[in-house]
Length: 342
Image 1 (cartoon, rainbow, N blue to C red):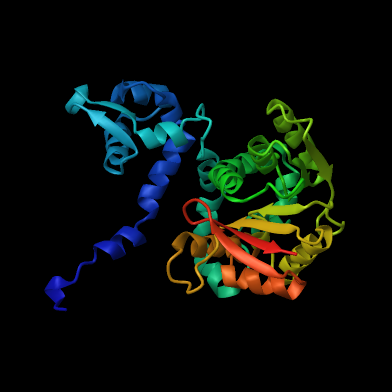
Image 2: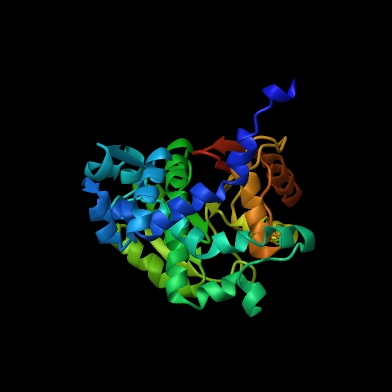
């Protein structure tokens, strides 16, 4: 290929990717998409609503149009802006499928921590709160109710589609009980119990999380079939159930702790029981799932020795723990379920 045929656009697009990223994250922080809702507004109206400086309005909104996060009608001072179908569905806080929580957390926490990625690559050490306070990320998180709620909201938004896909695609008909380990707001239990009325579910997490889960479960009208249980999954045995699930849990830990959780799940299951993880499983060749690979870099930044993994990795660990059969079930986007049968 001659020099004239070479094209640097991909390099520039990826290397300068923090430009569109921060534009969208700021729009979420300012609640632009929520303020617009189903309306159409001029730039001046949006500027007044969001408290924007006049110099910034046109560039900010027209960039979002070019990035396909807004639609525009007209030109000049008469131009009006409205949500796209996607931003109306996923970035308006009033929408039942709002996923902006993960973007809110990314803006508030991860964006600045990723600025220290080079240091993480060279040292293998986390670059989050522990770097500044000396306290591990989860210790900081669970000691601050506001930040815990933000984290729970982030996980709820990013997990919704995957939990719904699992409830639809996996055959729960032969099981009677399910325990979701690290259940947070009880979202997985609520979704699966709604789809499969014969199941009785338990959402298991630390004691500080129980009131959050109980409130959400009651609001969903499922308090008669979804229970909350509290404990520490590294210190206590897991509740016994026919199905043990873990959504975005295993990737938070190093290999020793991953194996502890897998073994604990094995012990809590009956013969024929199923252990299901929901993760952004990296393709076995480690060439395609860029999101899964970058999530693993994010685990480096958050925890140092934690990492994401392939389906083949998961299968090997589960067989080492005693599981007989492992299969991978694609869910939504970059996510899959790893399913191990005892």
